[in-house]
Structure formats: C-alpha cells, structure tokens
Length: 155
Image (tube, rainbow, N blue to C red):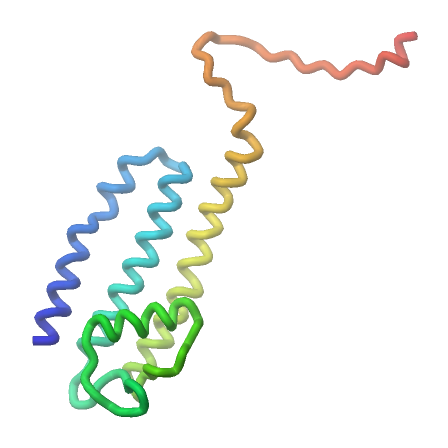
C-alpha cells in the first residue's frame, strides 16, 4: 500500500516534464532560472520523501516523537523540508543504517544543487539590473556616440 503511494508520486513527476516548461522561456532569462530553481527544489523534496517512505524493510526509516512507527509520505515530506531548510526540529529523526545515509545524501544534494541554481538566478537579476537600462527597444538601426569632453582644457 505504501509502495503503491510511492510509485504514484514518482509517476506524478512525469507530469512535471521540465524540458517542456524550460523550452518555453528564453535562454538565460530570469524566468528560466527561477523555474529551474523551483523545479530543482521540488524534485529533491519529492525524491527524498519517496526514498524515506519506501526504505522501510523491517524497521521504519524514521522515528517520530521518540517512538518508532510507520510513517506516511506526508510525514517523510515534512522531514525532508525540515532537513532541507536546516531547521531540524528533532521530532522526526532517521533510524541507523540506510535512512541516515539517505539523509546525508539529501543534505549534500541540497548543499550542492540549490546554491548553484540561486547563483545563476542572482547573476541574471544583476545583469538585468545593471544592463537593463541600456537595452534598445527600437527597431531602427542607429549608432550611439559617447564623448566625454573637458571644457576647461579647451579654454
């Protein structure tokens, strides 16, 4: 029953076909970088939650409130979000073994992937801020001549 839920969630990821969404935006645009950032975070969250849900062979992967019990996908999604944001309330903790390895993998994936996506988005925002006012919206070809003159030297 729990594994069927996990496979339904994984099948739902097919609906979020990233390449169709990203091809609708201009290469190197702010929209593209924002969509890529959101997609990266959502995919990491869902994959980690599903991984924590289906790793319960004999023992549950997570301990809830100091008692070991079976967890649901929403519980594992909650644990994933709390871990990704480095809040760590401590109400749900991974059991020894594979769940702790998965938790370490989640932390490393977030530490590597999310800052790179944020940096790309910030770079696009900065380039728009600095160079956005210099873009020409005219379709007429023209030349801009810039001259700095020292009027005091001419006197």
